[in-house]
Length: 160
Image 1: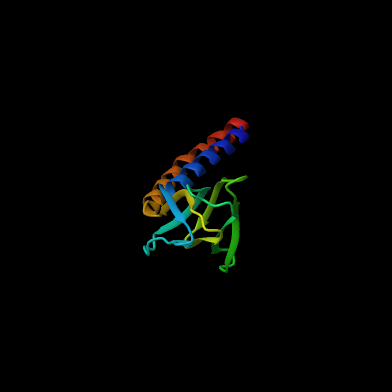
Image 2 (image 1 turned 90 degrees about the vertical axis):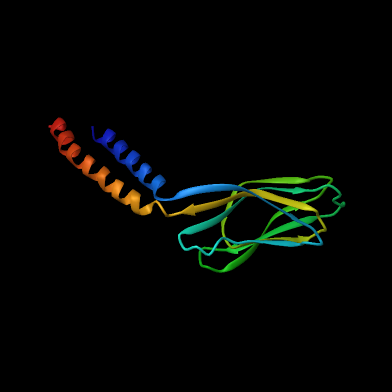
């Protein structure tokens, strides 16, 4: 019985964490070239919104030359320091596109064509997390707790 009770707790926690913030996703894309070598992704200044960039693919465009095109991402690490990391080295003959999976970064993020002339298209998702529903959900979580509390003694009686 205690095992199934643990599963119940798990499920109620999942509902709570999902409900605390609303996540919206939008298509993101930018093209880098020698004319426009970098793009800076920034979120709105609203306090209750958090903006994330989830990079998916880096792809050479039509007219790319036979050269290395290095794409670099600059973002903050866990210590709040800005670091730059190369994420793709593309060549039209051997690697015209790379999939980054779900490479998620918190705004602000700068994507730069460090070497090569492109064009390189970087695409992914612009994720916006809002905590607007937080106050509503906290009261619902309290309701969940009130519902769960009477069940606990009943389960203990079943064990006896």
